[in-house]
Image 1 (tube, rainbow, N blue to C red):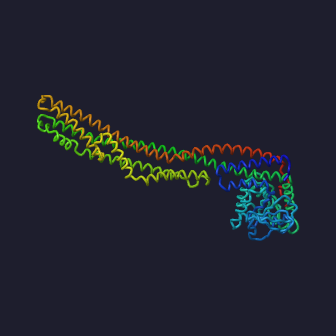
Image 2 (image 1 turned 90 degrees about the vertical axis):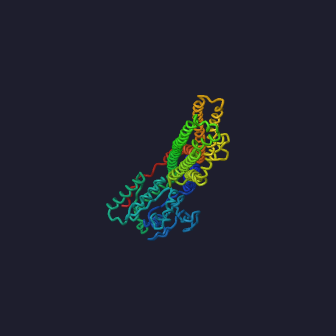
Image 3 (image 1 turned 135 degrees about the vertical axis):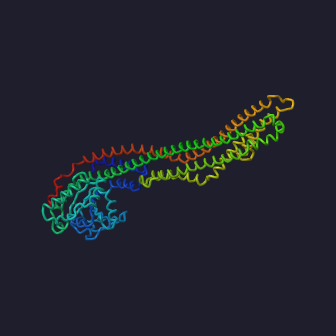
Length: 578
């Protein structure tokens, strides 16, 4: 490589850029193969210049390499003879094989003074039956500094070659197109037609017209080929010290461009996923609000049923008062215990049991709706779990784990907290509230029994008041009518108070259980909410770093390109092969 202060400065900046890119990729949890690609680019700066020969099986790569070197260095044949990557370097001992860290890469020495400072790489065929061959070639391509892309005159620029060339373009590699077996083309018109076809195809993939040379490896091996003379001239220009330095510096920058483009795409996909996740959280909040509204609506309906029971009791109690508090029933009025028992039997009747049943119905319905909400949350989250929305990075793994955690919390709630257990808890809470409301009259009894005690206390209040006024010395014309009016008023007050107590108890318990459900959902969602906020910050920070790295990359590319003008376009016509 050319050594100058300018090159040293570019090398230093390029190493710093590669280090920053590697740090970004590691920090963002990029896939391991992407991180390794950055490390390969760092190592490539210290490797020899790599001139890589690629092409389909049966395009004659090994024959071409042997003809180019003027010696039978590699085996030739009609079957896929190259099952590994051979890195040919100049050395004193012909055919000396050296192992490398990669079991599929062999280093082969041969006295090749023309390749001083250059490693010529022969790769397996890209369309061989052995799929591992293509994987080897594609994996080595990002390390290439200059690509000799070999196609065959009898099958020029096939669709699979087009796809492989697009891979070279993606990595920003400099390419020379070589059409082998040109001796099969019998007329200048056929040669011109093939060259134009290959040029057009390569231009469509690369976005520029690379040198296209028609050669015959067989003719070169048998005495000489004019096309090879043109190819060697192109290589002489491309492998000059200045041009080789330029290409050597450009290759890692092409790798950086591809890595940053991939990271940009992953970041955009992650941001899109996060936007969808924020929608998931909003949807959960909306479903929670809808659940609360639905619950309150059902609660109002249930309370109306309780009020109907109390209204029916009030009608019966009014009728009892009108029938019992009259002069014709003086004897009955003087027997307070009997009057109280009659009130319980005729007015109260089955009210406690009916209220108890209604409370049970309310509790069962509330629990059913509450569990239904959690099931709905679980189904909703299952639908929101994409199969492969983002490449399997740290981001996608963390996100998937948190979504599964929310769904798991719902499932755990459904499994650990049965309808019976919820109903039992709600009943206990309601009974405790009832005890406080009726001053301990409920004791250890159920809601309905407690309600019966409360109503019984009400009966004692107004029947006792009536009896206290009905003494033999106070019987007057207006005593009973006044007492009847007083009893009706007391009944209204007691029933109104009872309605208020029952509604307060029910709404309080519904609110308490609803708060429990809301807390469970908030606790389940909180880690995911925190994750989305953290990821939003991380992605915004990465986006800024990415933009800065891309600016630095563009500046370096411009300066490296200016190291030397591109080779003369004259040999690119391949006219010498005609």
